[in-house]
Amino acid sequence: MGRKILALLLAAGITVSGAEGVLGAQEEASSEASAAEEVLSEGSVAESEEEEAELPPGPEVIESNGIDGWPLSLDINSETGCLMDAETGVILFNKEMDRQMYPASITKIMTSLLAIENNDLDEVVEMTEAGVEYVQNGSASLWTVEGEEFTVEQLLYGTLIKSANDMATQLGEYTAGSVDEFVDMMNERAEELGCLHTNFENACGMPNDDHMTTAHDMALITQEAIKNETFMEIIGTEEYSIPPTNKNQYRRSFDTHVKLIYDEDFKYDGILGGKTGYTDAAGNTLVTFAERDGRTLICVTMKGDGMDAAAEDHVQLLDYGFDWFENRPAPHGDTAEEGGLVSVPKSAKEEDLTLVREEPDEEGMVRETVLFHNYEVGHMVRTAEDAARIEAEETPSPEPGPSVTNAPDPDGPAPSPAPSETVTIAGYTMSRRAFCAIAALGGLVLAGVLLIVITLILKKKKKE
Image 1: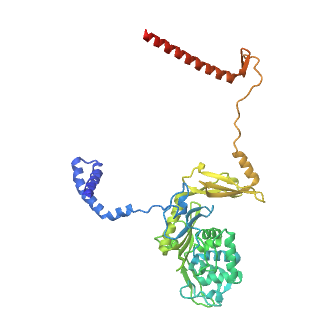
Image 2: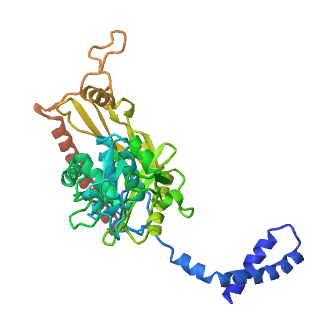
Image 3: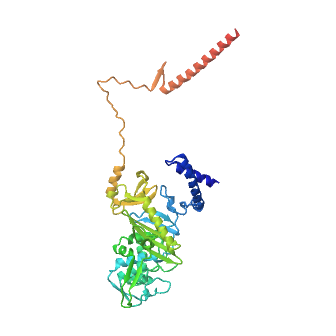
């Protein structure tokens, strides 16, 4: 019954708002009421779903949702995640981003970065036992054989696009002389980049109980990798082919696994590249990076339940980062030697930002941290001289006090004599304050005596 009344009111309201007469409105209301009732009946499931609409979780789930004034984010499917602004390094989204997880094949971002930095692309590499060891069922590979020759560039495409474990391992051994030495290089570089919870045990990400990293650390590694032009050219490729080799007469062709690049259901405007990963222990891991309006965001999720779910997480987080945040010049950022931008909510005001300045280091450089309600949103490094200049400009000058004239104006009236601090009465000298107190007390006594006299007089008159 309630649905019929609501439908009639809805239909009548819609019709009466038109320019037709009352009679026409009533006729249309009847037909539209039936239609509205049918829609309401069919939409009962939708209504219940809206009532149970997902709300942003608290900081116990999404740590960044606990930042004062920060735009709230919905939860993601993956167990951990991180969204970073590539230029400022500011973390926009944090879901247990420092929790150690198995990375699987996103390990290959570090492998490829080191291989690019230490080799020429046209160098020829011969496959060895170390590489072909990973040609096995259940392991992503390009079915290479010992003695087969590839260029470094071909191995890089196989590593980043096909996610071939045999090629990634071969790149590691070729770059450092042995896989163990290459793993040492990986860990040293991770430490240089500020990774605090990363330990690599191989070059490809195959399962190992001690091979672990975090979403935050992977964002730091990716932040460095995307500065490399060769890395960016390879990682954004949708498809690639390796021509026949000295050991194989067939062309090997393969496509990217990143759904935000090729899948129409998830294709993302501004996507630059990404890397997928999967093992039973790691679940689905994914790194992507996209650019819009001059800003590049890095997104990392770990232990997702299926690539579709991981891709959905990344679309959601990238949209969140581009829609709700922006980069602005930091206070006095134009004279900084390093930094100079802040990543803040689009609604942020100038008074929301504060600057914390450290003491100069041994080289005479000063680091400054920009805070948004006590959360770091950018930093700068400048010379101590420049910092001192800015600090002097920021220090307010003392306001001038009232002017004091010591000498009297000869043309003006004679100044009034200053009141004496003592009073002399009948030869007795006392302070002005004591005199005032005694006078006040005397007045009270006199008032009391007068009150008694008046009371007695009134009583006497009543008796008469």
